[in-house]
Length: 191
Length: 167
Image 1 (tube, one colour):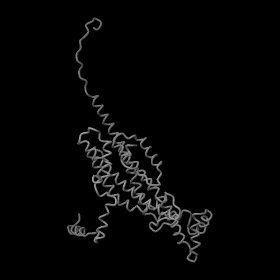
Image 2 (cartoon, chains in turn green, brown):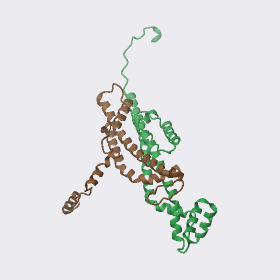
Image 3 (cartoon, rainbow over the protein chains, first blue to last red):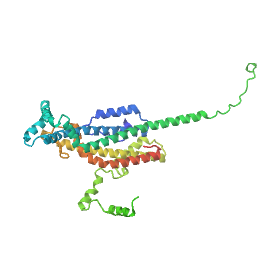
Image 4 (spheres, helix red, strand yellow):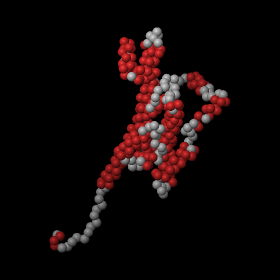
């Protein structure tokens, strides 16, 4: 781990779970047991890329969550008749997030328009589709690169093992030099 | 194949400057690369050069002949260039996170800074704060990607040259 640390600071942001990163890092070290500079490098990059990918995945979920209120407002604004008081709409929106009973009432009131409990989330995702697509792209790219780094470790080990095997086989195939003629015992027993 | 006329038109159009024209605009854009320092080579950055030096003490064996030692140092420099971009990205996240979290502590009332004009005031967890910050840093993260690609391509070339490995 000390060698991995030499490649730079751990990519932890304020508020991120240090223990989770350490578990990821220590698990990867235990599994791969890097042996040389290149293996340490590949493993460090893989760990950091996976951590960043997890960050973007988390951010995507959080972005949908923080946009939900505005998404709900947009949907209910579109479905509510213009004659209805704005204050009752505000109340319905606040009630949705604070009270299960009020949420059920809002769902029932707007059900005839096809509204259900998943509608605000769908709207939230639609409102954030461009950002979510970008997060998803970065996450996917990080995961692919992390996998490539880990494959590189295994590939180099295989190549080194193959080379050792080949060298070993080459040594075995060398014909043995003829043994030097030694003095032959002249005792009657050896004849 | 494009026609000669089209080729000449393309070349004429490319010469038309799309960059800043006013003095203040040019002054602003001249500072762009200094925000993160990634436009300069790592060898000119004293902090990162020192990091490479520390790493070389770990990986370059004592008594290693100069040529081989220099090869390893070149490789380590390319590796640290990749880490430099990662550090710049994380710094961007950190600064924005801290700025946003200060904005949420005003008067004990939790407020979310409007990002994209679509967010409303409500209590935030650190995950939600990270989501809002992600929205704000996303354009800059995208701009840093070209430095990431450049650093990684350079490292792959070094690896291929020195180790014969497809990185």
